[in-house]
Image (cartoon, rainbow, N blue to C red; front, top):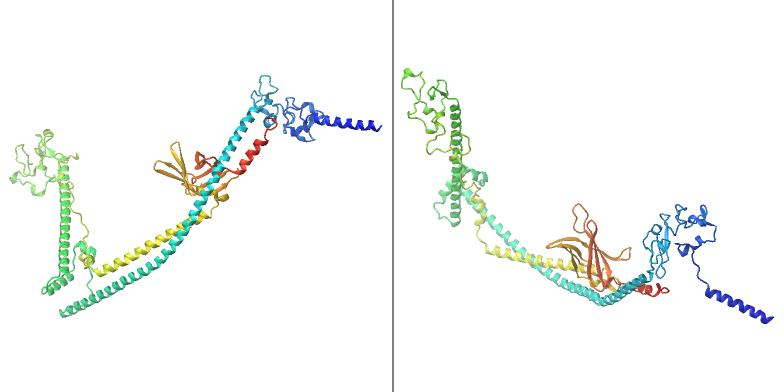
Length: 600
């Protein structure tokens, strides 16, 4: 009995092992259903619940009957195109499964690589291409992995470059600080020299001014004494210099003329100094130019008056000719009441007093007693003119010759002639001592200002270096290797350039458009490494230009694409080994090792 019991136990265990070995994994028997949702579509169930809700249910036989019963959830037709917003699950054996819209089922196109979306379409035969697709994807992943491995290798070699550039900045900062300390000491010395030179210049100028004022006062006292000796009145008053208007109009006060005459009489007994001679010659030239200007003005005024008078006389003559009386022989007849159209000195007087009431008639051969331009012409004489008579070019027809009044070339225009007193400063005798002191003070100021400017430039250099050293250059400061570098590429007619941590620009020939200055550097929401540039040149009727440089992993630094996704917003695609991350390499390695390993 014990032996039989032991055999029975062994038999049961054997059957259990066989069941475990040969049993198949549980799978859905409903077409187009994701394996994770198999429990909803069990064929053994009597009802299907739309959207998993107990409120709305349909018989299980209505599932995949090519009619959408669950309007809203659209989940009763996973294997047909009946529900517009339903989803079909592609098994894609040998690759990876995925959802497609149920509207693509049985549409005649192979959307699933295993062809399961056209399984019930007799008109289409879709082969299974999942193995080939998986192999192509793995080959692409392998290529990407290789690129990342090489890029990371180059990236690691750039660590030394980055470290070298940062050390160079630090060394330069130390040099500038040492140079600054030295120049500040020099600046203090230059400042002392400047103060001494300026003090000497100021002292000498003050002393010179004091002496000039004393000399002026002495001469004034001499003038007053001379004035009192000559019996003058109001000798304390200082003579006022003539105004500009008085100089231009040549109006000299009688009092000033008398003073000049008195001064000239008093000075006749002494020799004229060179300075007085120059002032006298300048005054004479001034008076001569003023006289010529006045003469030209008077001449032009007389010419304008004469021209106006002659034009008025010609107008009267023209009006009289239009109103003249013609006798039966065609000659002009003067009526008693007719206004004489010519200058009065040419009015005729009849020799015979008894015939004074008889109008005078001119015969053709009678000598015309007036100027020729006043001779009347008969209508039948046509357009015949005397030899040498000029036609009026303007076509006025008044017979008056205006050519003599044509604009003549203007002579020298009246200009303001500075009186001698205004040029007195130029006549000051040279003062070599003052010149030497002024030059020394100017040179000292220039030396001080130049050195101070050099110090400000060095201070700005230190500020720029500090900004660089405070930047976040990533792990182990690797991105510092991009500093002081610029990259460009030509796309169509434009050259696009960007200098990391500097500026971005769009160039065409010799012109350049600013796309912005460096703003930030880091990963965005899509885990892309992006360097942003902002506050560029303003677009016409738009925003300021800006640019984003997206870093992509590769073995070399190169701009491969630039486009403008929105107005004045530019986007660069920059390939660089600095974008190759170890985390991405690990992900690709894991994907190759674990993806599709059972199917391939």
